[in-house]
Image 1 (tube, rainbow, N blue to C red):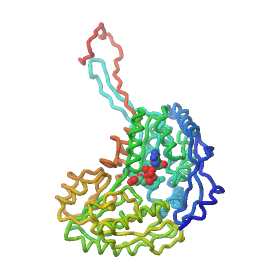
Image 2: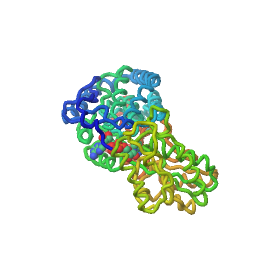
Image 3: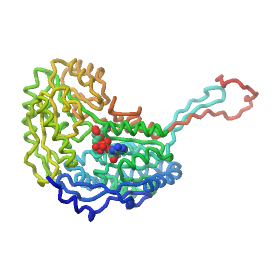
Image 4: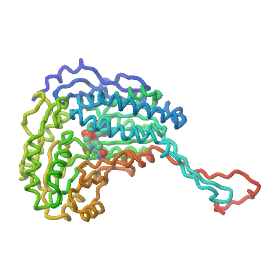
Amino acid sequence: MTDTTETTTSELPVVPHWIGGAERASTSGRTAPVHDPALGVVTKNVGLADRAEIDEAIASAAAAFPAWSQLSLARRQAVLFKFRELLDARKGELAEIITSEHGKVVSDALGEISRGQEVVEFATGLAHHLKGEFSDQVSTGVDVYSIREPLGVVGIVSPFNFPAMVPAWFFPIAIAAGNTVVLKPSEKDPSAALWLARLWKEAGLPDGVFNVLNGDKEAVDGLLTHPDVAAISFVGSTPIAKYVYETGTAHGKRVQALGGAKNHMLVLPDADLDLVADSAINAGFGSAGERCMAISVVVAVEPVADELVAKIAERAKGLRTGDGRRECDMGPLVTREHRDRVASYIDIAEQDGAEVVVDGRGIEVDGEAGGFWLGPTLIDRVPTSSRVYTDEIFGPVLAIVRVPSFDEGVALINSGAYGNGTAIFTNDGGAVRRFQREVKVGMIGINVPIPVPVATFSFGGWRESLFGDTKAHGAEGVRFYTQQKAITSRWLDPSHGGINLGFPENA
Ligand code: NAD
């Protein structure tokens, strides 16, 4: 398939940056194409920042920091409340934008916005989480207390698969805590970030507190090395997460870098197989498998595999793949290259002796012929040595691995590189208890296939799914975006006195 529009893209609109409370057209001369994946055409370009634009965005955030960080908590929170109301009222607009650049179906786009909105709602109550500690009279006449202060300019670098939710894991808390932000969205679907920037302005956020810097590696490197950036929150693939963590920390920044995943669902023989099949379909093929919490491997403890595979296959064949604006179940993949890469794993599966039960290549779709389509694909008896098992495929390809026992299932889950999410399906409470204690994974679902914790908890995986020691949102998010001061105070009274060069002891 050739994309005839690629040759005429110079006439298309160019997505700008958002700096200092206004659009800022890129002048770097470098752009990247933005597709409508269901149409298979380039609909716009996005400007890619150069050094001058990177410096300008960071300078805008740095200039806004003193006033924003000194504003009272009550006034900062009033802006958060207004932002939440506007987002809730207008999220339909944002969902349309997401679908037009990412491809996910509109209801799924609305779902991701709602999960991001949860974090905004959490941040409206941040005053509670910013309370310090106080110890009265730790020594005679001496009190000790702590306060939490914002860091300064924080950079957020986000992936293509959640253009609204992932940035919203971070910016509400960063902003409510008094920081200023430079968001570098994915160049594949940059417009959601611009929409959010305009919404912040409408909500009354002072100019410069929230900036959007569009770009690629050059923009990310600019954030990672700039002396005026205090912290980086990154979400994306594991090799880039590792690079971001190493580079950012080498430049003295606080970094949390969330990476890739390969999430397993362990199915015990006593499980309700209809519930399991529904859950595997939802978690395997929702958003065309382009979710870091997608289930990509079903680990079936025998003897259930034959019956379970039949149930999943029957459901997979009934899914409607097509344009996300047409009430379909599953949309296209984000780019042609990504679709081709995902489809190549079906060839690999065949070469490695696995059994392709449902083949998503060449399916009929409810959409334009040039869209980046790949239908739901189910592959049984995947050898654990196959790249179909070991690689993060990030598409609608669900693998089945058969194991003889619970213990072998847990050992398999613990043997991989990633530790983002996992799920167990069973009615056996004892098995569940062992599972949650023994599995080396950051987020666990018990008869829940996509265990994304609510915003009051923190989101993040283990092992190669997270570099750094702090997860996103919840209490860990507050800790990440603030630094603590401990203050030891003594108000003079007549009992003080005397010179004493010894180390202060409490008495
Ligand atoms: P990606 O790693 O290609 O890109 C992520 C961000 O990094 C983008 O903003 C991109 O511009 C930037 N980037 C890309 N290459 C870079 C480089 N060489 N140097 C510096 N920056 C670079 O990821 P993606 O394809 O956009 O997103 C999919 C990946 O994100 C998957 O691996 C998925 O599992 C992961 N993800 C993880 C989570 C999580 O919570 N752990 C959540 C969502 C997505």
